[in-house]
Length: 434
Image (tube, rainbow, N blue to C red; front, side):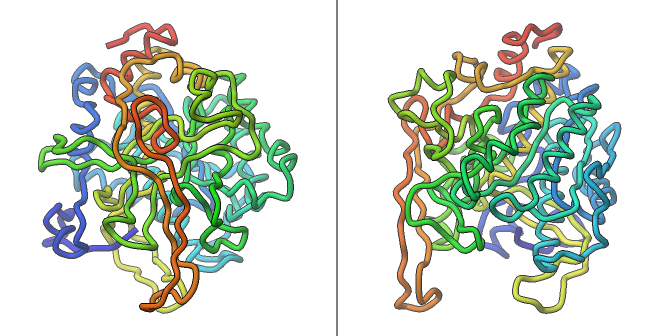
């Protein structure tokens, strides 16, 4: 998340982003056009009657006001219902956090992105923000409370799609069994036809160590993204004109060639914990004997990121005075693509008249509306030693290229919203499919 300013309190424009940050940025109208959502909205399919569940450690102390300000700035309606619950325990007062104030404001930023952009893609859907009382870092930390909260939501029938934009490297867990012990909410969700979406990660073909330093020098991926009961959402990069029309084909998200070492790319690769699930038998030649991620991808690039609005105090990494002024920011990562897809699923839920269920078998069964990605890769380069000097040493972990058909850079590809919602609605037995 990178802050920027705009004239007269208006949302920043693409020109502002290019002048201040040297990157393009996109607003809700551009993204709604890019993903072909307007034909759905014109038919009254805006998510009405469905509920998106956003799960985040801590949440944000200002999210209710910030979502309203975001909506006002872009002419979006407020969601019919926006509620916050804490079924796993009370959240500490902001900015208290045993992992530091920067960690706490980071989760506030995550929450802001998740809530605002799920709403952009399904402006008529209800939003339920589920806050948990401790940070998810790496390994088991934070997940027991997350799983407890998700089981509460599922058992009480509170939502129709769950979006969770966090992950931990598989190798940071004490054992494979410790991951298997945390799957109860995903089993529960499958039994209740609640699709669960998870970010594939932002470190390309690798991921961070248990101490959160970057990165393994071999190909690794993260959980819950690797769980077969979860739909892993990867990242692409869009190139749009002022109205949201594409000026180039989508590519696998990799900001490193544009923004340099230390930038990010879409997570993806083979699991070291889960074997290939049956729904991926048709792509066995790509994934081998392992579960491959991601399953599907939407825009995640920061070089072409989305605008968010927040007013909490943002604490800088390493200390220093916080920025407590209301701020517009450019955000990206699979933390953006995941809630975006959750919004699209909410549209399909409304069209079908019921929950669409576990998505993965349907996605891999030739579902329409999926657009292949054949450009880019998620090869990841990071600084190993003497970082920030002319003598710095970089490590590159080879990634996976976008190729015709399934690949572990973008999964099955990206979506055309109208055709995807129509096809998904019909595949699950919809009542009012467009």
